[in-house]
Image 1 (tube, rainbow, N blue to C red):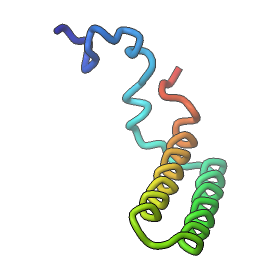
Image 2: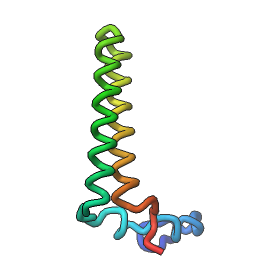
Image 3: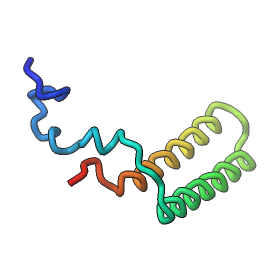
Image 4: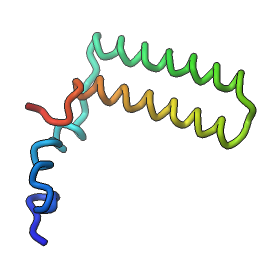
Length: 88
């Protein structure tokens, strides 16, 4: 199987979908992104608190908390990347 960089040849459309340099470089925060990160983190913490206070301890609670954490982290990534997976 031939490849272009790290992309298999049978996925030609993906070559332009993801700019790995853009995705994995450090995106220094600025005043605007810091405000967004804080809002996202604060809202996630409030929701996590609601879950802890209103659900029994156990695997489902742990899974719900992991998903809140994942949602918060993914939202922060969206902010850092400006909503783009490529630099265009």
